[in-house]
Amino acid sequence: MTTLVIESAGPGVTLQDGGRQGYLRYGFTAAGPMDLLMHATANRSVGNPLDATAVEISAGGLAVSSDGGPLGLALVSLGFRASLDGQALPPAVTFTLEPGSRLVVRAGSAGSWGYLATRGRIDVVPVLGSTATHTRSGVGGINGRALAACDRLSIADARTGEALTQRLIVPWLKREPDTIRVVLGPQDDYFAPDQIAAFLAGPWTVSPRGDRMACFLDGTPLRHAQGHDIVSDGVAMGAIQVPGNGLPIVLMADRQSTGGYPKIATVIGPDIGRLAQVQGGRQIAFRAVSIPEAVAARRAEAAVLQEEIRREPLLRTEFASEFLLGLNLISGSVSAV
Image (cartoon, rainbow, N blue to C red; front, side, top):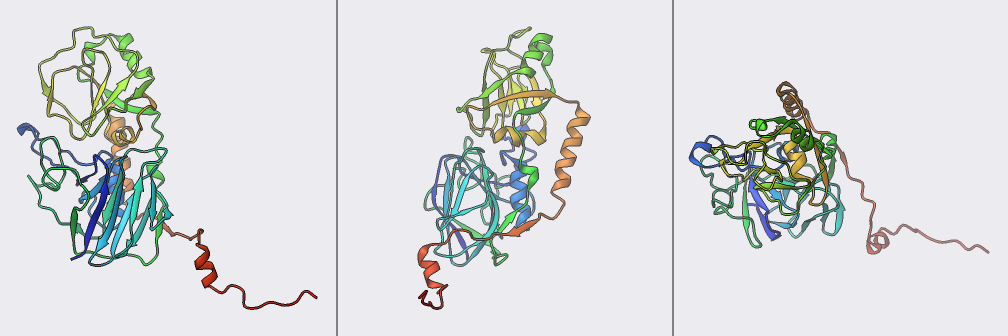
């Protein structure tokens, strides 16, 4: 069987499918990808179901090889730096990883999460119907932990795909992160109108402390009008809690199932991935939208993934001198005299 070999993996590199649904009442949140649209795009480009298991790459980077046969892959990692055997790859690309070759992905000037999808199913045992890794509860993926060097992922029904490396044309992934859309509530009444306005205006700086559980924001603290404690209730991905220090916390894929701080707003589904990709130190602001606007944005995002992804062959522009000399480009010479 063809195997994807993990040669090195930075902190936070995990296996994620579409998420573990239906268990929130038991304390299990869905986990799943930090950027659902990018994860689905990677799967779509290799013919997988949109919610198939893929490798989620953190800013810590990843290096992999193939054992037992060639393996078709899709890498979607806008802002990262990727190379195959030392040759640079586009940020969104499909290619075949031959045995003996090495794919390396490293953090770049933008982006916090990338996705590596395989032509064929990553063969890990589902837990509660999902392979999504939730490291805090030790559930999913490989024994509920992040990937590490020497891990070997068996690929069922492995396929090689196109003979040529191809650049993916994915304009919907070029999302400006400056403004994140939210629906106010459910506890926005815990804040006076001037504090709602301050929340929306920002600017807020994304803290480098963030992880798969939460995105922490730094800025001018908000003031509560009715205290900072509520009876704990369920939290959705994207919920924005405001604890006692007044600095908002956006709950992400590995969030807890309940929380006791008032939630001033919730990031709409299509903008959660946009926020997740913002690197620490960058500034954002929020914009309130209506529920119908949020639903329309979700439908537009879903429609994009129904279309065939355009691609173009990658033209090689960098050649080693040994390769050029081997082509015998000069067939002879003539005297200038």
